[in-house]
Length: 430
Picture 1 (cartoon, rainbow, N blue to C red):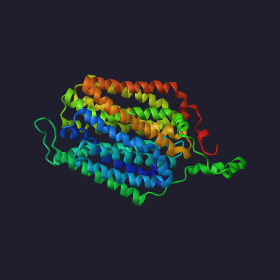
Picture 2: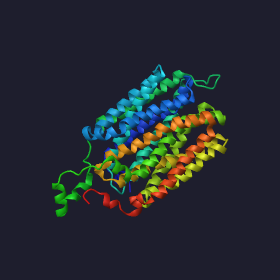
Picture 3: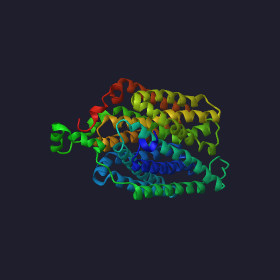
Picture 4: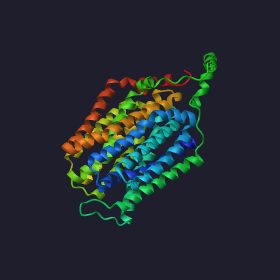
């Protein structure tokens, strides 16, 4: 079956285009953010604490996004958030002080969570319950493709700017500033794509709404008025495995982006200009394997597969302690991306089959709070471990978090509706 036959809704493809473009913008800026801050004279603890401000922006706006989407629509929220991110990333390289950078990072985080919740709500509302991991995997692949090309574009900007490493091994600031401005321009393109091409939101019930009107029971339910959305606590309990997974992934991703390049440069002797390519290998693994794992998850159960991928990824993280050849390290990064990064769309799909369509925006908001929580705690804790004890203990503690998720997923293994055959019970009107 062709992709367009399996996903006929053109709006889904527009979201893929927008998130690819945004991923490109993210990739450009993330590839050099720690190097840029280091070149400006910030210590590892400062770099970690600035990442906290980004996560604080996500935390502050995650739950309110549910209300924004219900009031203004996911489309409107997405457009505003994309333009907001473009402004924030363009202002970042000219910020004069730590406080200004912290404020910009908080705005960056707030706009980012608006983008994620809006996109996820649109995708889940426009996909069937049998197709959610497939749809979300292509979403992840589109962003991953941008993440792959972004660092390459950043490296190209530095190359064509004739940026040369200084005597202390750092890169000059001017070409890195240009890379951030490029990221902002790319984000504007994504915002314009959504503004001029994306249709309005569909009703939360989607295509399943007519089923609720079949027979006397359906008529009575329709006459009773719209269904109530459960409280945040009830939604959280149903999606707790997804939330734990995204918390660990947020913690891991935020720490790895900032400190793996520094670890490779300081402990393994890798040139800073080479470490720029590390995120591309991680994203490449995600891009090539996430759809394969999505098909398996849709068929056999998302949580079971997430657990197996976490084990593989943990071994790759531990591998950095013993590896010395940069080429082999890139292979390990690739495998880590294929396994650990693929958990993200699988956890989103697990959430999508664990709640009713009318609950999507609320579930996505709760889900992103945990993602932000991981990003909030990861960098400062990792930076303190790195600065006090070195890179190896930092890697050990990241691996321990994935082990904790594996144990948690075993304890609550029956929460996966696909594995227990209870997906149908979650459809609206049943």
